[in-house]
Image (cartoon, rainbow over all chains, first blue to last red):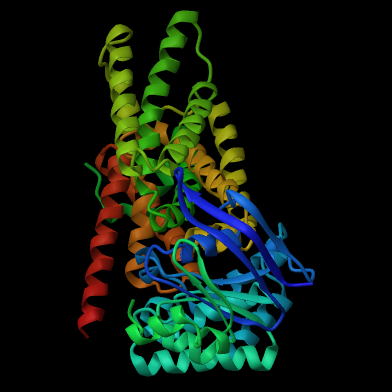
Length: 236
Length: 285
């Protein structure tokens, strides 16, 4: 069974349909990129997958024993967070909250898991550093470590490279790719950058308030819609 | 007039008075609660909720006094003020969630309306006498034995809940969306924060004054954030600052016969300016 199955899903905001006609599957180990212009419904769909927004029609089913609360999420940062006094470790371990439940404090195992994920992403040396003093790329790695603390199966990344310079962007894409290859974790990423999406992901979902394309990347680059967007470049 | 040069004698003398012992015990506990919650409130951009709740507290206290007059006997004001302020806290939380009225406007609406209602009731009952002044700016003589017992029990409950739910409060304050997405009942913890704040405001209001109590939630957190870079160290530093400032404020108030609430706030302001100065110098160095 697929990890996530969307069937005829639509979402609406205050009566207006934001996106409809979504039907796709995500399987264990997939790397899916959701591309489309601003306001095409990418973030809306992301909220739907995280159960922050109910679909107006259709169904989203989780399979393979994936629970709604076991999705690792890398959100876009808000202005308030950039100035928040917290150490990297405090932030990473907060990803363990869902597995800890109502019990007070974090256990030794939680601490070990948090450290292991920081190590995996090369930020273990920043453990006691203040989050707000890190560079943009380091901050994203810390938040990625937190996302990994919350999941073993599925990562949802919302524009993970926005605001980063090209070199750091390339490194972060590489890290995500390595993560997927080494651990077999499933990745769903929202991206503006269609070139990077085609380069890294093995599936593409192209939205424009409806589903323009869903399928393997190799097919996408051959379609009319894929070729047109690739010609237009990374910036929609 | 006494001076601070006889500090040890002054402190011993202070503790001779029953009302001072009560005021200091309750004050220290309330300062501690306010400082811990304050870190979350300030970072969650809820600082104004404390202010607003204290204004609601003013109206509630005036209503309680009115009821006293009507039934011609005195009973603990907590029974009127606590439920009213807790209700107001939930209302404020719901209002700030509502996108139609922006959070800060909602807070201003509730604050000014409460003051208006309070003043109307005052004008129809007691008039602006020294009791009303005490409600607004604080008085250390206000605590009965029962008030003290209730305050101790409630503030220890606030502290316990804060410690038990520390990690949830951190997660919800730092990143509400992530917490929600990974299955945390975000609204429950926001409601908990609002509830604990309401209780703390009510406990501290009599002594600090309805118009000054909110500073206990804001100042220690802001001062601690000038220097600390980790959340836990901000929380601990804020707690130490709050307790120290309260005690120093009380000693000054006793020695120079100053209003206690205002003295504590003035000491907090001094610490804040001092810490900001250190942060500035560090930033340059």
